[in-house]
Amino acid sequence: MTRVVLVDDHDLFRAGVRAQLEEGIEIVGEASSVADAVQLIKQVDPDVVLLDVHLGDGSGDAVIVQVAPERPGVKFLALSVSDAPEDVIAVIRAGARGYVTKAISGAELSDAVRRVAGGDAVFSPRLAGFVLDAFRSGEATAVDAELDALTAREREVLQLIARGYRYKEIASRLHLSPRTVESHVSAVLRKLQLSSRHELTRWAAERRLI
Amino acid sequence: MRIPQVERSGDGAVVAGVCAGIARTLGVDPTFVRLVFALLAFASGAGIVAYVGAWALLPGPDDGEPARRRRRIIGTVLLVWSAILALSGLGLSNSIVWPLLIASAGAVLLRRESRAAGIALVVIGIVLFVSHNSAGSATTLLAPGAVGVALAVIVGPWAWREARDRARAEERADLAARVHDSVLQTLTLIQKDPANARRLARRQERELRAWLYPTTASGTLADAVDAAAAEIEELHGVRVDVVHTGDAALDERTEALALAAREAMANAARHAGVEEVSVYVEPTAVYVRDRGRGFDPAAVAADRRGLAESIRGRMERVAGTAHISSVAGEGTEVELQL
Image 1: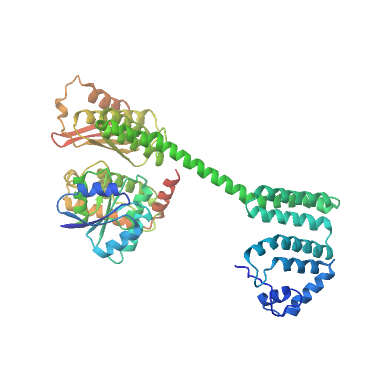
Image 2: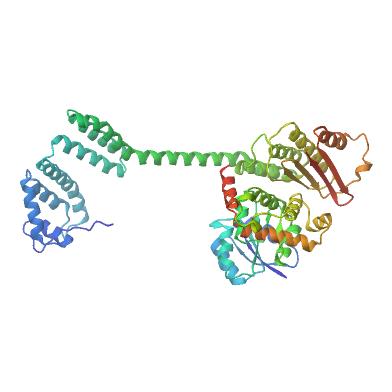
């Protein structure tokens, strides 16, 4: 049984998610604000937090930053209607294990929750597109070359995710095991979170201005 | 910072307890305060007028609220008068004292609610100052600048606040109009015609997103593919999810790429029997993928123009390639590359 806390400031949306999650996933609490969410998550210690990027009194990354040091075992999956890349990148950099759009089907969301609970990273096509964009430029100015650029393989995997491929399909297309695909994806996520490249933040800031 | 409340003092009063009260509030010897008033009395009698004004203005230990209010006006007038006397007595000419006082009164009124009266007083003060001091050459040069600075200091913040408030109100009105014209109308339509809810909601979502997150510039490849996706959604009632990284200007080749992609989306929407089509755009490539029923590309009849002409032919004419992979029951992907 995967225990989930649902954090979203829209009652209607929470009701929709509750109705769609499959057997084996139990919602053990709901919150609609950053303050409530932080308190609730520390109290019930769930496996996964489904976290909206925008909340009434702040943004989703504020929840992660306040909870993560005390509850390192809790995994966050960001969930949003937002298409603004800087918002999405901000929650991922704060430590979320993946990002899916709210248009996702109930079955896919359930699958994403189980994968995040199992320690995997979840990349939707849109997130893969954002990440490819973020790492696109400036390899030459990198401070830490290891962290600040994607390998050819990682880029290839991300590109296939952006094209709508699932891990299993990527594995068979690239003649890899699904486990290897997953480790590439986790490596990309780690780079995104640890990269010292200021381009990542500058890129996000520029997007807001357009 | 709070201004300490001064009260006239009952104990130690010589005349009305004004000096004793002030001394107690300031924590100094009453004799010192009396000495200041006495000295000021030599400046055209300013000290005496000030004493009477303070008597009227400062509440006694057992005055009620209505009594205080009545005496406030008389007291203020007397204190202002004493200030004029004192400044004149210090040797400042009338041509400086009066404009200064009028302008100060105006500035005080500006901080309160009567802006028009405040501005009028400030302007009168400035005009008086300029007209009385236009003789000397130095003042002639300085006065216009001083007037400008004074006006900017007093009117500037107010004008800026007004402009900001107006901009905010306009923004809010614009938002309300937009929500009314689009979102509310669509919700009404959906209630009347639930069968079309998905298509209506999708169209509304697209419009709202384009307004909220205007990410792609017009006249680029990404823009052209977005527009094509919108048309296909509209025509066939499927969801077309477009993801892009990077972008390219529209020229003959990228335009052909966008048109071929549109045809691939149309095929997927028509034949795959799915509700969603994924599209991924790079500066020199577009991938269109569905998870529908799939087909055998070799078995497509030669007279079906779509695949042969609109996709392959179009890409080959601009020295590009079109690769179609499809597995029955698993879906189709069209890879278009320049």
